[in-house]
Image (cartoon, rainbow, N blue to C red):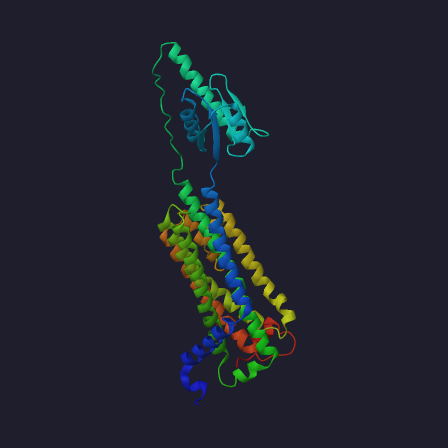
Length: 394
């Protein structure tokens, strides 16, 4: 079998990446996290469907020989967004029996001298519909007796000051869900990388690996392998989420929401490249899992802060906080998708944020690669960052 070095750098990186993918894809924590995320997305869609289809419904029985009360009840129901079903009843005894049996929510006796029969009490919507219908009939009768057969009532014209507010809300809501998912995946895969580095150091496997490949090849393979896995996971989740929302008419602006999902996926790639290198470098400074939390805490806090700022930016996407932080590398993957969803960002701003993020990634990879190379073989205790910078690279 030929030595790994004979494969060339690209081949070695592919081997390491394939190893990371095959290892993690069988990992229980990865499988469980994927299922939990998918279940949360499906559950959210189901909840939205239930809420949107769960409008108020009333079954109202009437004992009325005139035939005018039924249409009035239905018209009043439409006015207050209540689906009214009218059930004709023969007499008062039948009305009381229907209410007791739960066939109707209430029964109205005689529109001329109305009486509403309910089992215990009348809720607000039932009373509003019945009172409104009876009042409408009374006004119509009084106008007829006064000789007024037609009443010209002007229709109120509604002029919204923000006609796109609902659509913007859907886009921003989708962006918030997307960046929350992005945050969770960055934390998850960052932990995978960090744990893998520490496991290899503590078990001395890293010494065998570095006998046949360079530290930067090992780092690149880890980051690329888990990055491909993370990208596949977020794409699957986005497809399920957006596809389900479109299938069940949860969203009214499918094109914009799809664009928001694509934006979140693109920013995941940049955010992952930035944070994955930091997690790997930080993990290389320690040799025990118990010490991992300490070195990862600053990066984790930066991720938490970026998520909080991203959510706050949803309330004021054009504000100073949102504008400034959307250019800061590390924060921009959480903030810029929200601003893009709200339509508060110009093309040059997106380009500037991407350029700054790419520059930061290059800097982190360059400096982090030096630390990673120097600290990887130090398998006893913690390595100080300044010592790793001063040490000669492998």
